[in-house]
Image (cartoon, rainbow, N blue to C red):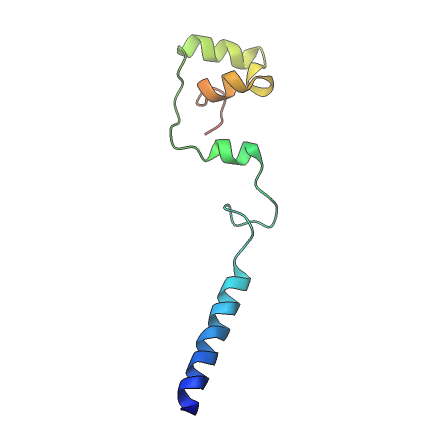
Length: 80
């Protein structure tokens, strides 16, 4: 009986140590993920608008100020 209790205790201790070592964010760092970090990790990395329109928007700095262009010109705005 004591051997079973000891085995359960050891397994619980291992679980606690492994869980405590995990980092707090998806990227593995100690800082919180920002919205920009989440946008960079998107799986659909393409421009919904024409390439010329997205390039023009990037030049006019709309990529930094407009969520509309950040979503629709991900590749040209460098968000992925």
